[in-house]
Image (cartoon, rainbow, N blue to C red):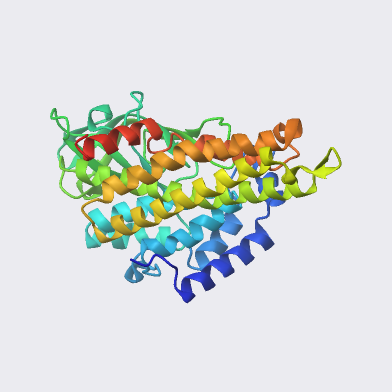
Length: 377
């Protein structure tokens, strides 16, 4: 099986790289996250990305998207990860896939065009105070009231919570463990409030979504009410795969930054990159990045094609990335010496991104345990 990118995909990569180098350098990223009113979203750049078709890359053409596959999205995600570009791209892609895959034609026509053209930001809200990715961890409840549902509860660690215009929310609609329903809730709904947490990685926003007797109509339900756990599981796998794809670019950049430093830093009259104690760790980082790159390429293909081993493939990729990317960030800082921890050096930004990636959609322990379960070990 050939996982090499096509000529068109490589041209897309070159265009994305050129755009980000010109408009979203690390210097500009720092300006975004150092803003006086806190880390934000550069709406102008987000709109330009949407105009270029990158936001709606995998959304249906009938609803304003480009209609390409998830494999092509890898190209964009690797480059945004390389630049640590603070955007709700992964969140919006996940919400859009939820609506496309599990929503009706009317629901797609209602919500997808706004997501595709960048006028709306979407996200997926699952985790709660239990901090578990299993169905029993969902306590936010949907109570029927005529033709409406009344939603009450709190979602935590919601990506891009404060910036989102619509939320795909997993709620409980029955006493059975897997009686879960996916509901689309639009910002501005009475009783809904969202706020961001202060986090280590200022290039990624994450926060809280509170629902206090929020009323939504029955046509806001994606799929069949009470039968949404399989859809929720698929979306969790998608989120894990997209986050890992973005981590490939970030880890590559961290390796490049550290390698360049090792070529410039002189110690004992030699470039430190000549020392085995530096060369060997850099080589190990390279092998690790290439390893989880190949794993996530297959995982995203498997998800897109509905392969039987898609869940197993996602867990392999996310487990490996969650373990090795933080190690690469730590080693990058260490090889910079004491200055690597300071704000002036870019390597510490990549360490913080690695710390953000590790728990998102399940850490290494969670996914290794799931690999064992799926493999009957």
